[in-house]
Structures are given as C-alpha cells and as structure tokens.
Length: 278
Image 1 (cartoon, rainbow, N blue to C red):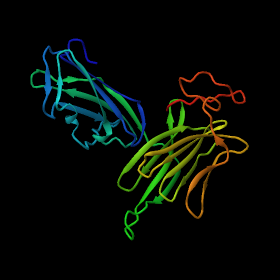
Image 2: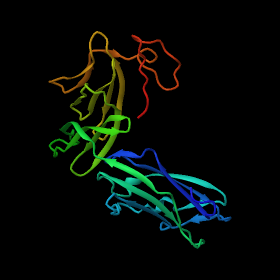
Image 3: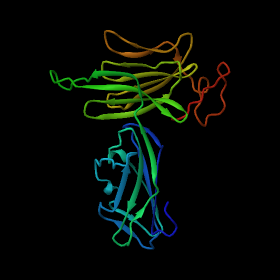
Image 4: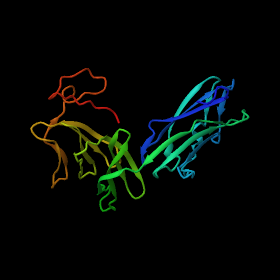
C-alpha cells in the first residue's frame, strides 16, 4: 500500500510472478480511502495502468482498463480489493520482464496516487508435443476448421512443469498448468474423434495423472492412476477414434496418494506421494 500520508493508498499484487505466454495474469488492486470523505468513481478515466517491457516500451493496449473502478463507491476509511486479468487489457504475450504500476486520481483530490511497482516475468516455454486436429462441424458439408494442442515445458523456480496450450491461427483459447515434469519420463498425448485432448503424465514413481480437455480448453476429466502389474498408457481405437487409459489401476486416495490436509495414510512400498497445487 502507499504511504501513511496518502489520501488514497494503492497496492497491487498478482497470483504469481512468472507466467507462460498467454496464461491469465490475475492482478489484484487494493485501494484504501484515507481522504476523510466518501469517494465515488463515476467515470472510466480515473484509473491508469502502465505496463512497460524490459526494452522500456509500453505494452500495447487492447482495452480500456479504466472501467475497473467505474461505479465504485468507497466510504471514508474503507478498503476494497478488485481483481482483474491484466493481459485482457494489455498485450503481454511476448517473452519479457514487465514492470506494472497503477495510478488513480479523483476530481475532489488535488493529486493522483500511484501504487507499488510489480515485476512480472513472461516466458515462452519449450515445445514437448504438438498436434493439429480438426473440429467436428456443426452443419453437414460446412468448412472444417482446425486447432492446435501444444504441450509445453515451462521453467519454474523449483523445476520444470508441463502446460497445455490450445490455439488456432487467430486466437489462444486456453493455457493450463498440468503437473511438474519428471525427468526421464515422457508424457503421452492423443486427440479423440470429438477433438478432446488426452494427456497422461507420470507425477510420482508409481503415480500417473490423466487429463482430458475439450478443444476450448475446458477441463473435462482428471484422474489418477497407479502402476499395478502394468503401467498406465493411452490407447486410441483405430476405428472409432476413442481414447482411453489402459493398464495400471485407478489410484486410491490415502493409499497411493494424499492431498494437503489429509491425515497420515498407510504407505505403499514405503512411499506416500503427496499431491500439491502448482
């Protein structure tokens, strides 16, 4: 937040400070009214957001972010937090370190007020697997459109993770974080006849994570499999185009894995994998 003498105190923060290109950058603006009066933000020109890349260039504006504060009524002494996706307002898809700050003014106040400066890293990642596929047509004989699913390796502070990006020539539909990379184990990926993307990743020595995403990037299924007498793998029916996991068995919570907050479970061969959020 700003200094104690400020009539408006501002602070900005984000859910993480390192993002893969096109991933949603969730920014939270916290604003406190120390003016001694109720302030109403009735127009969309009272908020300015500045985004500068590492070359000192302003990021291209995609939309006006001023409406984020519009219609806000802030009583004296009150604090409000407002969250928004920063890269729906500014072009931040290029690999760079971006510096971000926010400035707020009001007609009843003599000066504008500025937030802290926030450093956000955007990186491209490394392609591990990619597939172009057609989408089911809504009408017979209509043009068949296509999309591309790309599995990326992305370097985080504690190691690489896998991410899935779904796009076409005009748009990126989603970027999803999947799991941490296990060195020496290659991920499997398949597309079924309906355009669903199936990804199978080893996340522990005996544990695999299975994801199914729609071609719009919506998570349709998430399931854990454990090695039994065989190892889980993806199988695509050559005639019907259906994709399924064969081998292994469904993993059991409290036996094969635990989640944060679970009580201590029995161990499986002396190891109890713990799943943590990315």
